[in-house]
Amino acid sequence: MTEQSRLLVEGPTVLRFASHVRFRFDEVRQAWVVLAPERLLLPDEQAVEILRLIDGERDVDIVIDELVSRYEAPRKVIATDVVAMLQDLVDKKVLRG
Amino acid sequence: MTGIEPPLALLAELTHRCPLRCPYCSNPLELSRASDELDTAIWKRVLGEAAGLGVLQVHFSGGEPLARRDLVELVRHAAELGLYGNLITSGIGLDGDRLAKLVEAGLEHVQLSIQDTDAVSGDRVAGLAGAQQAKRRTARVVREAGLPLTVNAVVHRENLERLGEIIDLALGLGADRLEVAHAQYYGWALRNRAALLPSGDQLDLATATVEAARTRLAGVMIIDYVLPDYYAHRPKACMGGWGRRFLNITPAGKVLPCHAAETLPGLYFPSVAEADLEEIWYRSLAFERFRGTDWMPEPCRSCDRREVDWGGCRCQAFALTGDAARTDPACALSPDHALLTAARDDAARAAPGFVYRQHSAAPRRSRELVSS
Image 1 (cartoon, rainbow over the protein chains, first blue to last red):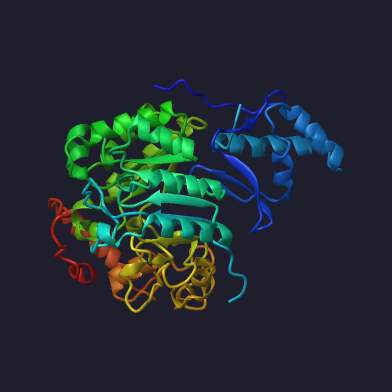
Image 2: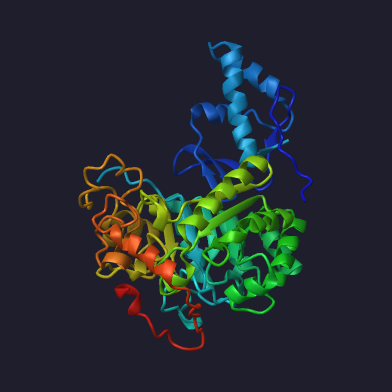
């Protein structure tokens, strides 16, 4: 019935914003927003930092490395949070492979 | 109250004209005439005001927004303002050429309604021969144009048992998302409530069907599904709270906190001709009336969910109790909750046919709505 299947987010996965998803800065709120079909996300500061690293080139491992270099937390903790958030956004069709 | 946030989204009802005659139509009983519709220049000004106010998404709706000849121009204007444009359509009359123009103008997404799974019942509910086939064509051109597609299926007693097939149909149409929306009983739908309200058994089966499909289709198709008010224990946070997130502009230019708000008596809703959207959003009495929690009666006022569901739906409270300031009867804590139980019993007995809108004639039953 469908050729699609669920993308599971792992270290080597390269993600980009789905077409017709807009990640932009809103001047009125002075905040980053994600505009998607029937969805509107107001990501918090940490989520914004992660999303700004999503560019269709870096894989998830590199995104995590980048965040590890910015924060004190252990890599494992950061990796778990990041993968969970990215998987959720993939399932919501905000991000794609 | 303090800290009124800017609105997130605008529902732009461009017209009440529509090729369909669904018995659960949520538009008002008294539809705006084409001659009363805002013109292109006013809509463009209003879209500019909306963007300035902080609106991020605009849902072009109706009626059928494709009935407006200036739709491409309005979509383009919205896109140039940075607004995320969504077309909410019956799909009737959307061919590849028109869609290509809309996409080129910056349209981001299409929400397509379906009434049922097969042509016979789909066309019957839509009140239009050939509707189902036209919708299938529209889904195809949307996918071919590379736009994300949401299929919206209003469910009710007559089609709820086919929910599994509705899910398969949406998948087959290439939908990224399926909204399973229970008919909501105000506007024309309240007139047909006894014919539309599902039974408790139907509902349990439907909920189980959705849960199974969500697991099976995780990451493939999103299914949005909310339990209907008539079987809920707590009300929905209607519009995310009155005057908190959404603006609605009617075809004739009235600015409303929700698209059914004109059913409420004693509230004056300003028109875009009288004031700009910022003035209306932050300072009009109508938007202040049920904003926040100060207006609430008990049991809402002392409820720990008062900032979760915001007292539920004002239009439903009014339609069922005659008082818009009462707790939504959908809440089991409401003193009026028995009204919903009675409606369920009523629906369990009755199996009447649908009463259709007659677009050519003046609506005749307008006052029955409030007393039923």
